[in-house]
Length: 370
Image (cartoon, rainbow, N blue to C red; front, side, top):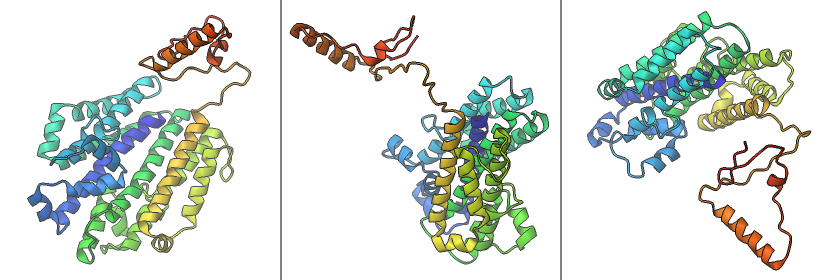
């Protein structure tokens, strides 16, 4: 349930990021050049902000027009493409069908089937903004259905934990996409671009209510990084994730009982006592990089605390041979044993074989124990 919600949130926010890129293209002075060259240069900030540049270069060493958009949306070789995220979310949901509601499954299944179909590919080609809107609307419906139908058990807390951690990370990447633009702009165009980013985060209405119609860097940072009441701000999401972790463990708020609570609490404290002036002093891109590292460390700590269980020292450890599909290591081992037998020495039984329990067997090629 934790990873199901993270993948849904990731797909939604990638759709939002691509919306930002399209609208920045339409607003920017380089739009005519991008269209005339037929290049994908307006997608490059999205690749940089989502750290997918290396994967893209590996899969597309000589990219053609349209490759970046396909890579980010429907390329099954890209594990972070929108289609891949929805497929993983659906697979995770399938394994916990008994813990989620029928309405949740129906909504997730519906959007996956649409995106993976030819109709979805045609929609992306003919009307990309409509394609992205459908993904965003489906994710919002899934969120509403979850709130209305799912019992507030431990599964609910893990689902919310995954959603808020992923949302905090992706909100920071909305800000980073502006710093990745090749041609920085100032004045009215810069204000227009910040407004586009706010609109993609569904933050424009809240911003105007608090700050009016003038968009400035300082106020946008205050809204998307440090707001305590806007539900997509980094500070709001980290605080919610911290609350979920304490609900799961039962530890009183303000204390910690494991590594993930310590990481989340430390990050929340930094956000509570930071301001836009601190961000600008350090540099927006550098601050966001540090923020994303802290979020990744929190996610890794959650894995180590709740997924990666320490081995039971009271039982003998089974050390399996390395993965050897071509039988190279097995052949070398047999040659070594033949040499030892010819020299009259006693062959050494491998540790992993000596520690097998009664009735256990091992496939020497795959290393699987039965």
